Amino acid sequence: MAEAICDIKGIHINPTMLKIFLKCKGIEKTIIITDSYVTPGCEKNKKFNMPNGIEFYAKNGVNYQSKSGHITGSAMTMDLSVRSMIKHTGIGLKEAILMSSFNAAKIIDLHYRKGSIEVGKDADIIAIDEKINIFATIVEGEMIYNRL
Image (cartoon, rainbow, N blue to C red):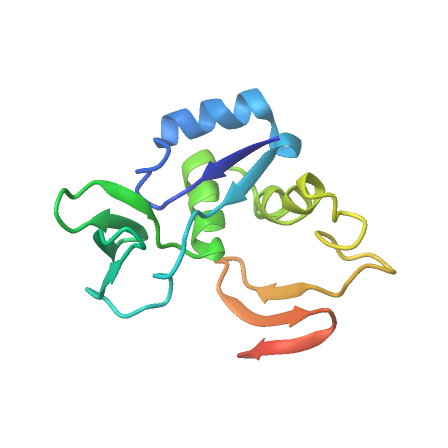
């Protein structure tokens, strides 16, 4: 298995390289991830400090060091990462969801409980439309977010 950080602008992985990556690894051996921390969902232009004191800010789903402008990580959510994988590679929604759910559960040996909807598994479900807008989130059978 291999992980891919898929941001909308192709900063973490160039879209051409992402296509090559996916062709080499295949859908079944690729996991869509974010490397985000702290900043997803925070107000624009807010600055943060790392434990080592380095200041950073989020812009367009990417965290940058305030001083140098170097990338310090991601500020994107999983829905954006899935949307970006589809945009950059042309794969279908079904394949992208597999890479962000079942494959991720498999690598940490939780695929017997998580990552797909089957009898006996935890009911971890998101309700989305074709544009990957999230309308509801259910965790272990309990609705924790509802915009339906």
